Length: 435
Image (tube, rainbow, N blue to C red; front, top):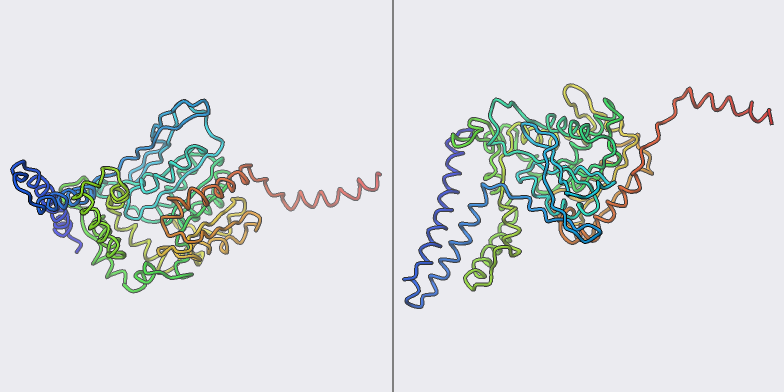
């Protein structure tokens, strides 16, 4: 399937369904259709409205739409999105609250590159903004990146994170959500060896596949059930002429979306059926719960082929990070080199994507980190999205993360050298004798 033809065919199918929905909605809204009572027209219009919205959202990057922040004096401050560091495959952006003094807590929120845009963590950003100065990774849609920009695999992703952390300085607390958890840990370990002064103060890993085999899920089993050759043949396509990245090999967003939906097909089918009924009855609204969720869920982006394939091969199949055998730019990354960065692991009891135990495996890999700097939390009843968005995140997990950040806000004290320790030991008897 590594052809432009198959890529363009999927886009044509999406476009056709959007057109059919638009046509049905327009046809049902003709005044002449109201001359006689015909419930079918109401259902046709409702189906068209829901269908058009669903298929049009698949190719649109959602807006951040961050609400203004209310200061202590009751005034509202607009949130501006600034680009701190711009790169070919993703930018480092800052949610700057205009007119507000910088917060002591500086947080880098590492968003997933797993099919959805970085706006997937929008609610996480909104919940952190009142108490933190928030930065995040804003990954680009691969179909819009020219082939001349080169490749982008998990090693490049890791080095991007290294550059972002260096840019922000060591007075930083990193929160990685889902997919980037193992690579964020690798980036911090890379800094520990290459530039210790640039390490963040703390790192919170939320529901990430550090060791996928620790508690296998359907995602893990799929990774083991197919060969790399099969994946490349079945999942990889070339971007069509319509986009700037024409010719680039990608794992298409539309193909990813079909996989997402197939995992819970019945639930999604029922959700769209109920929305059509609500629309026909006049009970749906522009920003109701269904539209708010699916506007984000259906918005998918193409993933660079080399990133997808190297993730499957090195994180899931070979378990390079779980075995502490990961290399970046020819250098072995030793997770045990992390000795000063406080680490907290957050998992959800009902997470069916990164099941409990997969992320917890990170703590065992950090052999050089004292137990006093390790923490873990398992949220009862929480699914995958619930551990970084929604009520369980806001009420239970977020306060724990903020407390963990505060507990590790001070710069770590440099370890004393063996020579310094020896001089202290020999100096002690002399002082005692003088007394």
